[in-house]
Structures are given as structure tokens and as C-alpha cells.
Image (tube, rainbow, N blue to C red):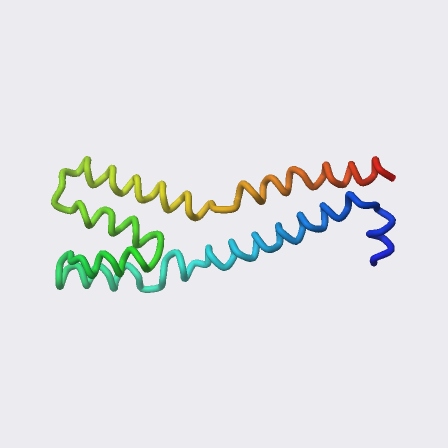
Length: 128
């Protein structure tokens, strides 16, 4: 195996490093984007029942925000429950944009690695 890598020349080491980084990013995204972390089971039922029984409280909002990205979006709406609908809509949209940005973390890095890898292969062949 090492003989193949050695025969490819020094540019192949960049490709190996990029591949290891890509696999690490994919593993991190798989762990972060599991359904259980994004939308826990019986999530809606539990929070809606709690909301009906006790109403909105600061403790409930902080627990809801800490639980998942969906909880942060829901909490943004609940914080503005007594505000006009336009204000509530804007706060939910902003929380949704922030959550989407967090969920898309490292995707540009992964895309860059995917774009550069064929160039590294070509450069390795060029240096032969």
C-alpha cells in the first residue's frame, strides 16, 4: 500500500490529508444531524402539553432552547407570543435562519475538499 502512495509522489499526501479531513467532517455531521438530536421523539406532544398546563415561563423557554434547533425556533415564537404576528413571524424566521446556518456548518469545507481533490489527483499525475 505504501509503495503505491510512494509511487504517486508527494502531491498525493495532500489528497490523503484532505480525505481524512473529509471523513472526519462527514462523521461529525452524521452525529450532529441525527433525527434524535434535531427532533426528539414525542417532542411536540410533551412541550404542547406543558405549554397548555403551565403557560410560557422563562425556565421552559431556556429548556426548550437548549434541547434542539427546532426548540430554539419554537422558543423564539413563544417569546413573542403577546407581540403582533409580524414580530412573531420575524423572530421565528430569524431563529430558523440561525438554526439552518448551524446545521450547514462545515458543508462549505466539505465542498471545497470535493472540488480540490480531482485537482490534486491531476497534479500528482503531472509531477510523475
